[in-house]
Image (cartoon, rainbow, N blue to C red; front, side, top):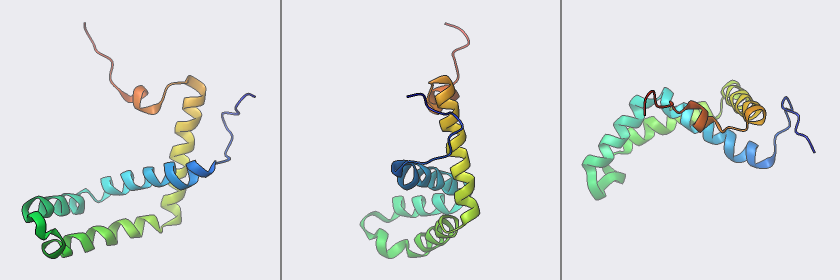
Length: 106
């Protein structure tokens, strides 16, 4: 059975796992300052993370939740996934490998 490259149908794993993964990665990039603040706090707090990093954790959760609940953001990430999937079906090369730089000299 040949796959239609432009097929927009999503499987369960794509809807529930792969697209949310893209959403998490993209949201973390957009809110990198909050991610860095929380990471820095965690590194400096040791076992007292829960107590000392509440402010940073709350700020990070608020940002990420806003993105996760935004239908336009979900649609943007879905279209990005479908574009990557279509390119994979066309070339047979996963996005990670396509984006790697080739060595210029050996």
